[in-house]
Image 1: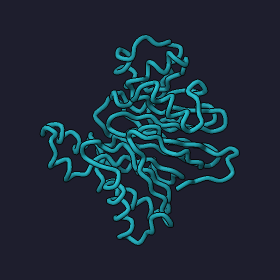
Image 2: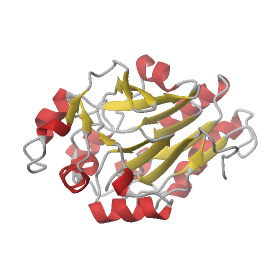
Image 3: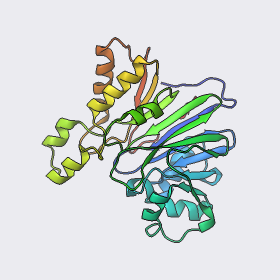
Image 4: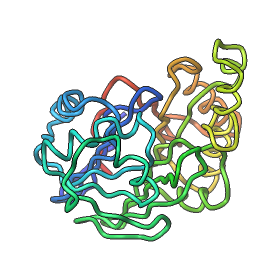
Length: 272
């Protein structure tokens, strides 16, 4: 599947890595090139960018969703190596500043959750999500009357999140685990309880229902991300969501564009 057209002034988006073992996303419009999270090694991020024709040296900034290591483990390396500004809320910064090494304080820019700000050619809305972190957020990016949204690490869906993710021209939404795999798997009980709790992660079934609601309102382009390595696999995530849509009268591939982005493989560039 390729969503493209006249590339002049379009938004470009790619998932570099998306999963429980590490996350990094990329979004670009005009001269603004943003890395969302840096949860894998610098060389992996650099090579992933090269695979889609981009260079880490050309990045404008890094945005941070929350402090967990699968989103921030390479944050210090990236800002030191490329003198990159970091956009981060204060709650998250207070949790990562002592773990990412010495950074140039002039490169730290604090945003307020649920308050829109401008970053280069984008308007950015960082909206709150329920997760077991200090002040976690998803992001909506606005440019050229288009909206791209990334929303992962969500313990449960609520009306505020629904409001923020609806009407997106492209939505990357968490599809973390299959509930039956989790319950029957080898994780210790406290970890199972955390993952399926209100501040853990969305399961395939809950993601299916959310996407169905959005599809009924006319939304058409979805990426499934942040899959668990132990408690999910891409074919199952896709089958669960696609099956829900098909059962409710939608034709996947025609009415709805649906893909899974992988934890260890960079996606194509999507032009929106």
